[in-house]
Length: 189
Image (cartoon, rainbow, N blue to C red):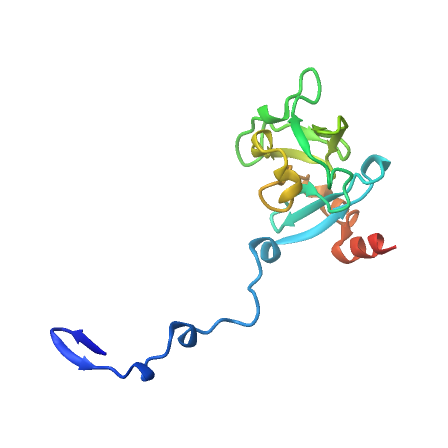
């Protein structure tokens, strides 16, 4: 094979040039995802003493909590028709408006507050509850357009909400949630 470089011909032995697969090292281990690297997984089970009202809470080092459905939530395995964010006569979760570092104007939620109402194809309705108290920073507006993403990618695009607990109560809230190991043990029996 002749290779032309800077106008000169060079003879290249094809056996001496390794294929790209041979020349690139592929690491044995897969690097951690962003969620694995920056968030601690915790779980709230049977929220409001309701069976299978289980939620995953991803906790960032800045105390923000990302709420999503846990694998054992009652909705898993169902098909969602729509999600209603109008949780009362005067409260629509998607109209949550806040400003500034202190999240002024944010809706305040308690553990057990309704975040949205899910309407399933089998006619069932499920209230999605907040697993932690705090200021509602954001509801996932993508759920209005593609509601089943809540089931398909719960710890990614299908998150439910982002909540900022009070600093003074954060450690107590965190310690009240199950660790990943405790959650696995609870669901093995």
